[in-house]
Image 1 (cartoon, one colour):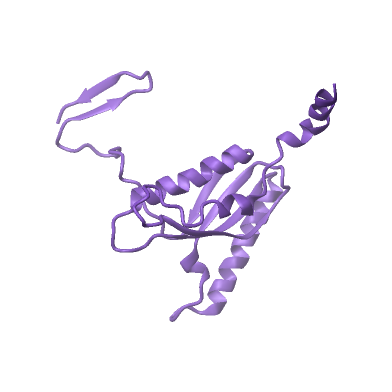
Image 2 (tube, rainbow, N blue to C red):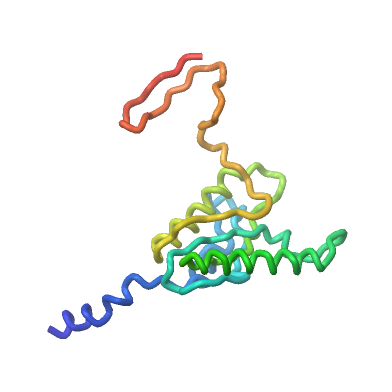
Length: 173
């Protein structure tokens, strides 16, 4: 009886989202393939707006755009932050919770693009598991995924794709 009462009392809170900074902290130094190279170096909340229980939109912003450096006017960084916060407020006005996230991902000489995309996908999967997720936006230079051979143009060789019905179809050069 006591357990049933606890379930009834806690039910309204069951769908509430988990704290977002804690979710991001889980992915600091995230290494998808355990090769010693972290695809996600750091994720940090840099702002946001909206009700905590509203569906989330995550805006990943390349950390390089937010960091003062030679040749970049400090006023440009301040203006970018202001525009991002205004964008977050606009999304909040539409009934969403916007999370602005500074993202530092691998940018070394090794080709890690697909793994970076997979790492960001894991962040989004965890966010979706924590509460409703409506979308993600990338601001800055993030890699394209070319791990899976899907492209909008035909190449000269044979291609075999699985259709929506689950059946494989062969396309010959």
